[in-house]
Image 1: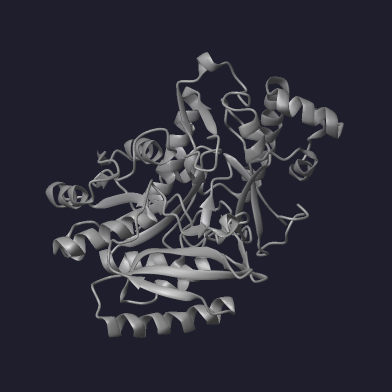
Image 2 (image 1 turned 180 degrees about the vertical axis):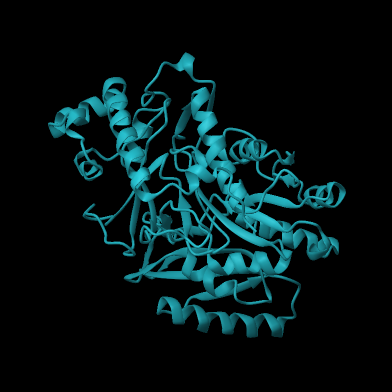
Amino acid sequence: MDFLFNPKVEKLNRTKIKEIQIKRLKETVKHTFENVPFYKKKFKELKIKPENIKTLGDIQKLPFTTKNDLKDNAPFGFLATSLDKCIELHASSGTTGTPVTVCYTPNDLEVWSEVVARCLSMSGLTKKDVFQNPIPYGTFTGAFGFHYGAHKVAALVVPSGMGQSERQIKLMQYYGTTFISSVASYAMRLSQVALDMGIDLKKLKVRNGLFGAEMFSSGLKKRLSDMWNLDVHDVYGLTEMCGPGVSADCDQHDGLHLWEDHFLVECLDPQTLEPMDIEEEGELVITTLTKEGMPLLRYRTRDIGKLYDEKVCECGRTHIKHTPIKGRSDDMIIIRGTNIYPGQIESVLLKNKDLGGNWRMILKTVDKIDMLTVEVESKTPLSQVELMDLEEELKSEIKSVIVFTPKVIVVPPNSIHQEGLKAKRVVDERKKV
C-alpha cells in the first residue's frame, strides 16, 4: 500500500498545477537569463527576452540544453548563484568523459528531499520501516537522495553503501530490513549472492523496494518481485535534475508520476524536436522549476518514453504520468540495419527461469559483417547438454524480437565481471576492428 507524503500537493487540481508551473517557469527563465552566461547568449541568438514567456506553450521559444553544453562549461559554468551559496555537489559517473557536476543550495537539498520522500512514500515507506540503502555514498546522487528522502519520511536508515554483497544480506537479516533501494541490476546481483549463501530471500522481512539509475524492464521487475516476494517500484531521475526523485510509480504500476510543481516535462521527437502527441513515444525534455543552484531549461534527457493523458490516477494523485523509460536515444544500437535497444534483449532473457540477472551484448565486425553475441549467466551450474539446449532456445526467442539470429553463450553464475554501480550491457568492439 502506498502513502501520500504531501497530500495537499500530490492531489492538486490540474488548473492549480498549471498556475504553479507558469509562475515558476517565468521565475526560472528570469533567473537563468540574469545569472547564467550560456543562457544569456542563447536568448540573444534566439532574439527572445524573459518577458516573452507568458504561457506554458511559450516554452517552445526557449533554448535546449544538452549534456555536451554542461560538459563544455564544467564544472561550475552553469551555476546561477555564487559558489559560496551552495553547500553540496554531486556528479555523474563520468564514464563517457567529463562528469557533469551539479551544486545544491540549502533550498535545493530541501526540494530534493521532498520529492524523494514523495517517491518513497508512494512505494510504501513509512516511519515504521527499516530502510537499507545499498548504494555507494559519494558524488553519485543515488545514495544521498534516498537517504535524505527516507529521513523526511522518518524511517530508520541503514546506510550500508554498495559492495560486500554477503554483508548486505547479513545486515538485512540482522536489522530486519523491510525496505530497500538500489540499482535494479545490483538487486539482482544480491539475489544471486543470497542463493549462493543458501538464504531464501522470501524469508527475509524485505517487502518493498524502489529501484532506478538504469533502464528497468518489466521482465526485470517481475524477476525481482518473484525472487524477493517484493512490491517493486520504479523511480526516475538524473543528476542534471537533482538525482532520483523526478518521478516514481504508484501501486497501480501504470506509469510514473512526475512532480510537476518542480519539473516541467515535454515529449519531443528526438530528430525533429517537435512535440509528440499524448501516448506517442519520444524523448523526455525537462525544465527545472525550483532549482536555485543550477536551473536548466529544456534539458534533453535522451530518455525515451511516453506521456499519459492528464487525468487523476486511481491512487488519487493528479501529477502527469509517463511510461517506464524504454531506453536512451543514444543507447539505440544499429546492427545490420536493425534498430535495437538493450531492453529488447533483456525482455527475452528475464523470462527464462534458468537464467540469472547478469548479461551483456558484445558487438564485433567479422568479414565486414556486424556480429552480435549475447552472454548471460545461468542461475545455477548446468550440464553441457543443458547449456546447449538453453542457448538454442534463446537464439530462437531473441531472433523473434530483433529479426536476425545472434550467437548466445550461457556462462556459469557470477562469471560476468561488473565494474561500478550500473551494469554495462553493451560492449561495442566494432570500432577496434
